Image: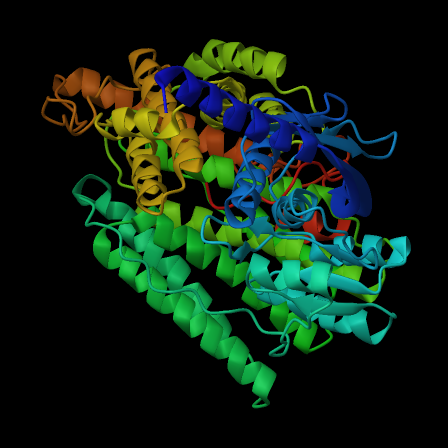
Length: 614
């Protein structure tokens, strides 16, 4: 065959393939996916269609779609294309239709649903419409855990679904779903991988059920991390792990569910011991922190005892009794870390209305919110116990301008009230109002860095792995910069590159801000300029080096001042202790643990979502 005819044949074959691909680039499929909007559940209508193009994925502009949602959509479409053998050359178009009150959708929980939709569309198949699903899609096809299962189950019930498909990994919410199933006509199905979901949704095949239990996670095997520069944080991690273990020990009962719950959390303890052994101190502490919250709430579920007023009172007492040391250059970052967690716990306390009439399952969710506050209060205690002492006193007012500037920067970026960053911005502003300027700076910087990272990730040609490698190659100098650097290293070892980039970026920013804070430190009026340990100078010990007559005169004046101070303190004994946190600052509120328990520091409504130990 001549070259001319060979080329002509190739062109004809290529044209036929293009026409075939174009012919296949059509179709439309609709599915409802559950979402948590504010404090309630709802459903979002998702319409997916194919059109001739270059293999790109397009999502509607309104409502706005968050970074994690965009990533999960890309991963879902790519996974579906991989298992379907779908030819390249078709664009995927997705349209989200939410309620009028919803202008922002965030989170990867629609990943499994969009994978199944994409597969059905690419295979030109139809999906059953009596089931609603939630769960992330992982690279190996497994379905990952998501939050808000109770609210999402209620939205599925309202939509009239017969089946609600969920992941297998969230123990606390699975127990709630067990209760929901008993009082409704919906059947909850646990799925471990997307193949089960596709077969159920397209072929009506049964998803095997093993009871309402979360699957145990495998032991991680990350490379060894040098934790020598954050070694004091080991005691904080051990403290949280002990709290978790003691909470598991207190779970009563011997039926199969109780045994399975205990086995699950014993496996969690083994994972944390592995992380601690490998040098990932923060990662171990964070896992124990989250498990402690779940276990404590599970105890309330098992015992049908979610006394919100009592739990809020316990949190109020914890906050009211916490003793804050004077800040010096040695304990500075530890105290700031404590201030942050106190502020987060206080926000949970302040957001909880103990008198609100709630359904039983809703009370468990509110109970869990208060457990976040209690756990943060416990972390704050652990940080204070691990904090060093010594060095020059710190005048925190010297950071006021820096805090003001960072809050302004964050305020320009965090404008969506449904996002966690907006909640953190409000907390930063509250810390500023209470003159906890270090905490205000750290929270505002978190907001700025997370919002900036989101915008970067949304842009094209973003390579998270390259950015992570660069950041991991850098040496951190601040306490929290080093701690978060270790968490970023762990996330990278687990191939969670986007999450790693976000936390590593935050670690770098903490280094920069902390260095600036140390440059601008002033000592309070009347305090000696004592260099902090580790600053390259010997630690001077205050003492008397004056001539005897002058020393005697000063001693008399000092005694008079002390006596006068005692008289003033007695007169103002109903006020605040100077060493105690003073966060109940609103008019008419007092600060002792008991009074904080009775009155509550305010009634600001809940904002944002649960946060980890951070």
